[in-house]
Structures are given as structure tokens and as C-alpha cells.
Length: 265
Image 1 (cartoon, rainbow, N blue to C red):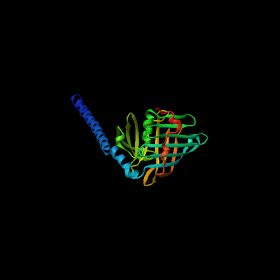
Image 2 (image 1 turned 120 degrees about the vertical axis):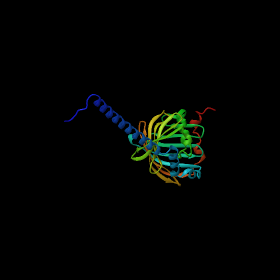
Image 3 (image 1 turned 90 degrees about the vertical axis):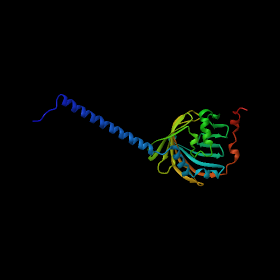
Image 4 (image 1 turned 135 degrees about the vertical axis):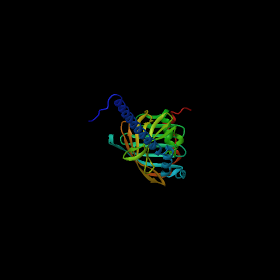
């Protein structure tokens, strides 16, 4: 004869089963918490990722050998069916000029002479760059901009190992002042694979993603050779074809006359 538990016996049976279920839940939660903690501890610090990138591109010593550089590139804007030529001039410590020539539109210039940031184009003429876009221009002007400097960030935290453009990358949440975004470091090569977030432009901030598709060797430096920019009304692919060192005339960074007219004495 099979006895069915009842009364106090049934209550005890239910209590034991409830305790067993609760213990199982606690054990599962503890396991997942320990696993998450172990994964977090396994993630490299953002600073070490930046240092690894710097070493992979050649380090500061490789850039210290030069005082200026001229980069030539082609730019493709697929959404507009347009091909353009591009030149970027840089000089220590913080000067740059970028020139893009678009067919049937003309020459678009942007620059920073260490004090004034500016832009000119055939449609809007000359303009001074101010606000957050000015900070972006200063960053572009940094001769060592291809190196990662933790001192430039108010926050940098590695949050996960994830897929980015078909590559395993460490995703780092970063902030520069009030601007937040993400940087992705290739887990294999250590090189910066891309950035995403709001980017300041003369027309205002836009959500964008920049992918460093390929790096090349230029004068002992590993620099981005192919870049894909996504965001705004149209994305673009930029392919650098050559880099020349120490051949840039200092007059390249002089303010254009139309820009000088806008600068207050």
C-alpha cells in the first residue's frame, strides 16, 4: 500500500521542496555572478589597450623623428556616386590643413593654425569653427593624434569583448569632457579598429562610426590606410595612397585671406 503524505507530513514535504528550489536558484545566481565577475576581471584595462595600440603603430619615438607630414588620399562617397581627391597636412605641434576637391563643386578646406580653426567651401564661403567643433579641430591638429593618450580622457572603461566589423574587439566606453562614445581595439593586433558616438562638426554633432579597415606602413609608422566613415547624410571611404615627411612648407598653415577677415584683432 502506497502512503500519501498529509497534514504535518505534507507541510514538511512542501517546505523541504521549497527550500531545495530556493537553494538551487541561489546557487545558479551565485554561479552567474561569479562568472560575470571573472569575465570582468579578465578584461584588460583601457589604459593597457591604448598602450598596446601605441606600440603597434610604432610608438611616440617613431613620430618624434618628423616635424611635418603630407598625406594624400582618395575619397569615395557611394551615396552620391562621387569620387574626390584629398590631402592632409600636419606640422608639430598642433597645425593641420585638410583639402578635399569635389568634382563640379570645388575645393573644401578646413584647418587649425594652433589658435584659429576655420573652414571654407564654395557654397558657404569662409567660417570660423567654434564650440565643440573647435575642440575636435584641436584634436585633429595634434601631430600625435594617431597615438592614444589616456590623459585626454575623463573616462575610459573596458566593458566587453565583442564583434566589431567582423573582428573580435575590446569595446571601451570613453568620454572627453561631456562627449561620450566608444572605441574598439582589435584583440589580435592591438590596433584601434574604430570609434563610434556623437562627433562634433561645423554643422553640429552627428552620430557616426569610423572604421579603420586597414593599416599600412608609412615611414616606419603604421597608420590607417583605409577608413570608412558612416553617419550624417552620406558615408565615405577614404584610402590613403602616400605619406611624405618633412616636406610641408610652413606657409601651408597660414590663414586664407577670407578667414583672416573674420578674425577679431
